[in-house]
Image (cartoon, rainbow, N blue to C red; front, side, top):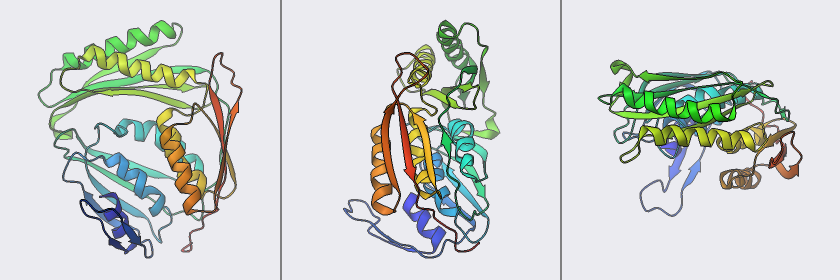
Amino acid sequence: MGLSTLRDLCGGRLVGAEINSCEVTLYPGQIQGGSHRADTQTAGSVCLMVQSTLPCILFAARPSALTLRGGTNVSHAPQIDYTTTVFKPFAEKFGIKFDCDVRIRGYEPKGGGELVLSTAPVRNLEPITVTERGDITKIYGRAYVAGVLPIKMAKDAAATALRKLKQEFRDINVNISAVQEPRQGAFGNGNGIIVFAETSTGCIFAGDALGRRGVTPEQLGTNAAEMLLSNIRHGGCVDEHLQDQIIIFMALAKGTSRVLTGPITLHTQTAIHFSEAMTPARFTVSKTESQLPNADAYIIECQGMGASNPNI
């Protein structure tokens, strides 16, 4: 679905995009902009579709509005709350502005969610330097249920995460709400939790968990809190999931970008590999000191290719 959408956005031609194919080739045309729709017809993640389409439509000839249908809070992908709260403000550091309007939330296995991604084109992306971690100043989040699931499940997950986080941050206010999603704003049954921590320099970290058969609300709350704590302890400015999502923007930017991160993930290594294979951008990764004890921090530096929008 992601490649098919990119084909439509640029009026290109796609060869080999079928089940059991061993090779896929995209012959791109000019990036169109305008209004487009893409429907996974499953619980395929709309957040992953945002990741694949946003770098493309930023270089369109005119503003774009993409209506994306699928799952908003599903496994093996960022939750939509992560995309809007963590990814969006960081991506905008590169000098872009975009909106993610969540019309309907969708869950596994049916999907049915809807998101409208809209943005204006840019001439080029600005390089960034994000190397000052700062101190944790607030922690917040939401535990939710949708459909026929009882609100008690959200309350139990929220309470467990709160207790776990307060053990580590006794002097910081922790606010985790329990939410029953409105029926008109959610399709199907689903539950989960996502928690965030913000620092004095504007860094945002997250931890989350999705409900599934055999997993108690208390386990969800514990898992989300432990993921957040792990992302805080490494001493970087971005968490493990944001780390790989920003590589393409660093590669496209005009100039040198530097970001302080935790241990380099396999997804990030893969993103760097293909960015260097497909563009003139060059990356270096180096171990560095952190203000936190027992931290495991690294600097990702990129000399971006300076991609320029030929339409502006």
